Structures are given as C-alpha cells and as structure tokens.
Length: 210
Image (cartoon, rainbow, N blue to C red; front, side, top):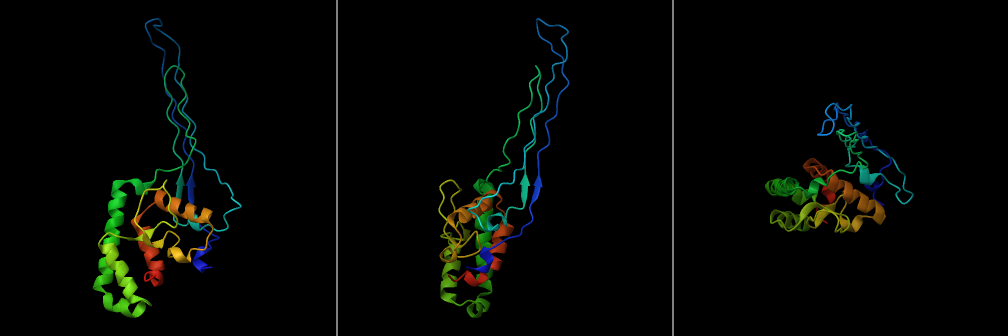
C-alpha cells in the first residue's frame, strides 16, 4: 500500500448555521384592522454531524475538504410562520459550475506548458519520459486531465480521464476500498479548487509518466 493512501490525522474547520431572524409584524387584513403581533420565529440553522463509518479506514477522502459550513436558517414570516430549518450541511458541487470547469482546463494547459518549456529537466527526472510527454500533449489537446476521478461515477460532474486520481496516485496504484475512493472523488468535486490540482500534481510528480 502506498504510504500516501493512509491519512489518520486531518484538520477541518466546521461551523454550524445561525438561526434565522424573527420578524416584528402586526396582523393587518380586511377583517382585522388592529390585530396583535403575528411575526414568526426564525428557522433553525444547519447542524454539523460527525458520523463514523466502519468501512473507511483512512481519512484520505477528507484531505481536500477543508471547510464544512452549514447554512443559516431562513427568516420568519408573518401570520406566525416560522422560517425554514436547514437540515443538511451538504454543499453544492463546485466542479459542476462552468467557471470551475474552465479553470480546471486552464490549469491543465498551464501545467502542461510549464512541462514543455522545462522539458530537458523532465527527461532526466522521469523514469518513463516518453510516456510522460505523451500525457503532457494529451492534456494540451484536452484529451486527458492531470487529476481525474478514482472511480467512474454518474452522479458527479463529468471530467476527462486523469493521469492521477483524487488520491494523488494513478488509477493502477489505488489500493483503497471503493467506499474510500468514492468519498475522495465526492469531496474533490464538492470543494474543487485549482490549487488542489496543482498540489496533487506536485506531490504525484513521480507518477506522471504512468
């Protein structure tokens, strides 16, 4: 098992949601000229729930998930209506946004151009330089990406086949159980950032000729 597969300590910032604001309101309608107060309370903010899973034996899938922020409750309304409660702390999948996809393509091309400009260095540092530069040009022509999913998943935004996976290893070297690989892919897509791609490529440089 690759040493980088096992992660037993991480630091994640968690923040529960604030309760929604109540409102000051007095009932007014065609049948009630001077009704009493009927402003509703604000809704309860989202919780952060920590739950163990006996099928996962590493925290690798949380390595790139730095912040867990629950949403705030909705504000109250008139007629004593309480604002909506936010139940889940799930975040939108950033990788599904068009700007994230453009940024991913941009960083892929930028990294590849850097490798082309400094090609003499990589001829000596890479064990398989021909395969390495084949990957470089596949990515330059947008046929591959430097960082792809560990497992195919129709529920996540589609991206091209990766030289590396979200674990930092090539697909052939992933020895984690499927649950861990899917979790790693999920958090990568949810909290996508181009700096994570750069970090994965930097740490997995020796595998770029795989």
